[in-house]
Length: 304
Image 1 (cartoon, rainbow, N blue to C red):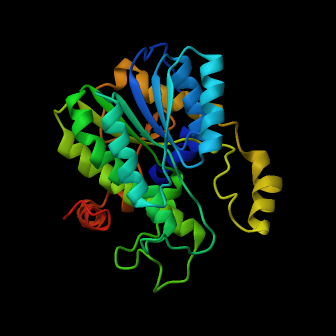
Image 2 (image 1 turned 90 degrees about the horizontal axis):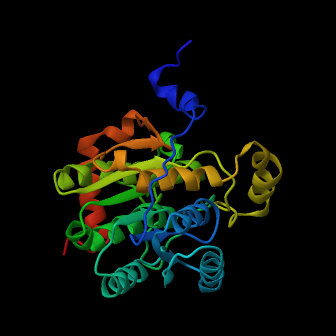
């Protein structure tokens, strides 16, 4: 029996995923959040595929370890840029560094992410999950976009989540000041906002040679959420962990989206790893998307 459309993501997760033998020799790939989980596996696949990597990471020591490992195990050139995505000034500085170092950018993969069970604000006064998961990637993408356009054909990939189906996005209460804070819904809100701006950017970039897509990396073992209290860490490590898959499947899926020739002209889509999929209805609200776009411009300082 075929599942209803809103539950199709369950069936899609069981389907065979697409792969590619295409290489990225010499192509510059900017990848955020590369020291563990999905980002680390993506970095390994990209390095094995010959890409020149610019890893944007929060922790300098972990980044240096990944850099040394990839340079030991592959022939790829691997560079590091340090930035904390909870700090938008760090994102601006990272963009400046990238633009100064690299005359072209072939692929941008926004992977850095966060899940909190308790409300926290950044030093800019923004709810932290919304900042890290949406605003930081939005700002980095907008700042690097002129270089991506000059490098066309180029690709932007937003690592999103089926968590967008949790909803939670209220443009009048992004800081959760009027509602009890719920971790899953705050996470969902950030991913809905990211998807809504993907559709806006896809329209903007139509015909430019630059594509933008979002993807769910699969139900895999990562460290996201392990910054939370002991009970959550116990739940994830001893209960949830055993039903999750190894994150290598996510790295392979990201490599496909970044390298496959058949993906070159595909834009404005959501993928369950590599399977084209329809997002939840609330993530397709274009009127809400235009409002979120304007709010994102204002909160990141791009509207000035």
